[in-house]
Length: 255
Image 1 (tube, rainbow, N blue to C red):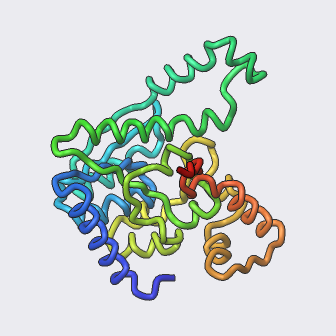
Image 2: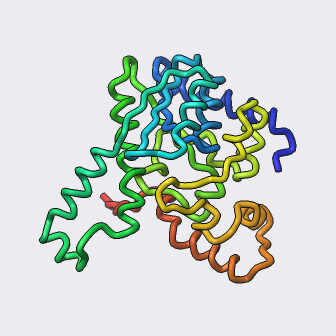
Image 3: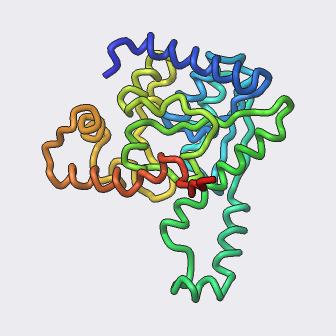
């Protein structure tokens, strides 16, 4: 629990301002708006740190998104410019390309996309979209990473998808701390405390992970978990997903 969430919020806002002073004084911040807590709070922090017209929200449903109204509610609440770009056609084209290759299907021993491929392809298409939007904007842009420390710890993100970005205002905050910042910012309660979901798997995040964020946050902070099976699962997820956080290994040439 943050002892002084107002102070932390102010520090993040100043950090964002300093980032843009050093990395693009004329650039805009581009953020994918999912309608969940992380993208809502990241966008709100950027809106406070920069002029509102320097924060561009990008809504990216994949075909039909049942909670797209939450995304629209957020950008309208913040008063930031936004664009809605449906990635459905791009997803269908990629899926058709992959499943249309008999050579690939034979190589993989399958007759279609794997479940993980189907879940992770949309986030990667969304990140490509964010960078495309950023490069089209006058003055350039920097893409906001919206990951938090809890999800990073267990690798609950898509590599080169939502795990990518140019700067990350929330990556040191656990889920309950992110919500504290959202409350301080005065965001709508239903967005800050919305049950998190990836919108892809048909499960909410805690169902998919197999434990609650409260349990995860407590374990990250204290190293204690009452359920040995849950502890083992968290430890395993952390271990196998470290590659998402660590820099890409590179051969070191000795000259």
